[in-house]
Figure 1 (spheres, rainbow, N blue to C red):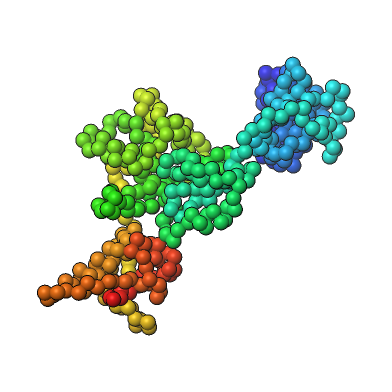
Figure 2: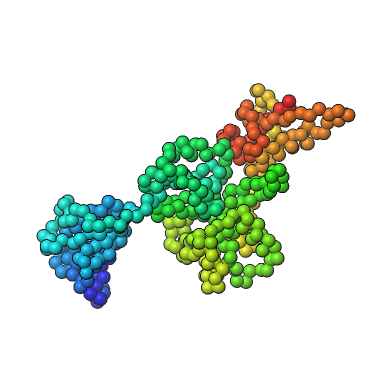
Length: 410
């Protein structure tokens, strides 16, 4: 047996290879879809193969004959042979593990649509895995639904479950929680494993800049980058070998840890390729990133776009939006290139109001200046002061041309 190997393929075939002869000596064509797992009985007289199509075949290595043994409820991921109890343990894409007893009588070795075993002898029931995920408009929270129909609210920046919502209407829940705001996508949410997985990619990880308030009065706008916060939090304990000694690094870490505190047991992985579908290079937990051996591995594997932020504190440039600000008119004239302005896409409309008052209207003269209210409009819709330019452009202006704003003094 040590000179033979059995290998499954994505084309549905299973091949028996002779290492001594260095060639394929038998091919089994039982499956119509990919074969994902193979288990061989002790003594190498039979093997069991399963995969995407959820069927398990029993094949005889001596006669090359096969039989349809059973049908599972989900694609078969793994099979373990229990020779002592003449049974199989099977794990599938469903959350439960089933025990199947093998037939006591010899099968006729014919392939038919009727399996030799119809029901499992025992089941170890698993939890209900997540099957869908919807990212909310604030790009901080995700609503997930499990296989039993229960909904959950997760916080991405905190890597934690915020609330169990129960069995609710998902569309209605998303509609209630979504606000009129636009923040660029900086991550993708995946639930293929039954758990919520957040994927960060170089192409958009640093695209979401936002302004937060430092105090209760709403003063001291602080510009933060969601992707940058997560990267700093994941690698907060990593000390890069040979990195320049920056005296402000500890201060920066303390600031990031306050804004984005991940549980120490949070796992993450470095994956080759995009969308989390490539080869896994390294798996680690947040609390393990400070271990000397793990630090050396991270030194070799950390990609450049992560290194530049984490070690060099180099943040990406802000995204700019071009816009015009003009007096309000029901039928505005065609705009010209004069007066074209540019600002960060997360600039609040309240800042535009300040600009109109200071730069366009100017300070009022006289002993008793009259207080005026400045209103900003886009497409004849009044804008709230807390809205930002990118939200206005994507939800109200809805055009690829330069944003056009109008002010009205009341």
